[in-house]
Length: 350
Image (cartoon, rainbow, N blue to C red; front, side, top):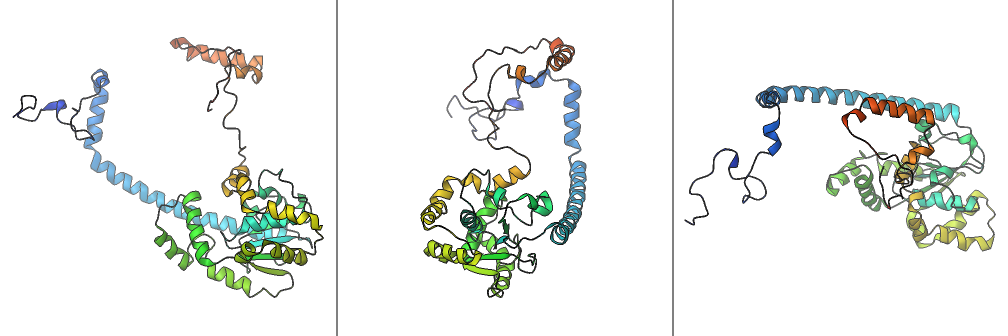
């Protein structure tokens, strides 16, 4: 046996490590010997109580799950009540209102952009497409004031036909091949809902109609039955891909719009995949949700400058902070540079 290898395992805290590199010896951190003995006793007692802690933790977890289920039921009731309020009391239809209706992942945002470009001058100065084409049913939660929108108003909706408000307005329904919808919806689940399951598991849920917004088959078939209603235009996603200009003319005729011939090339360009991909932040659902919750995009990285407080705090506020600092942190010997002349850092996260 080589001399540099011990003939028997080392004992105590210098035994062989069980981590990633068995060539290193496991040693207690140096600070452990300086910890109070009372803390070490508490650690040992905590380890001895593991069976009881596990039982208590399991019971608390079960109680948490029950409460979570109850909160889910209450949340559904609250949404149902708010939607009934929106549908029956708050929403006042206008004759030129246009509902862009789809099952999710069927080209909803694309159709919103098309109708927006056709009914306006096509400016892209909005923060998000929801500013100019709000999601109708989400107004039950965010209390969006539809009366403040200029005509013609464009509403996005994923509601099935049975739940859509029946008013004197127009409905454009866009349907997409369900197999493509399933694949796109799975990608959306992973990117926005943190879904960790396989596609096979998701596809089974999709077929059963237990995904968000329910059954694709029910959704599409019920809108298809109303395709001949005078205020319903039923389109297919595949037709828009193959002949976007032809689809534009159908929408123009259906909405009784007057579009100058010279504007059509601009509208076709603005509704292209490359143009919308270039402005993706204006169409992403995550951006819409952040704006709805009051977040302001582009403000996470500020100035990164020392002494920036001097432009915000009044003399009284600065003095108040300093008094409390001197009585708490300052008396421990810690100090900070209050200088206002230091150059900003290139990158700084606050």
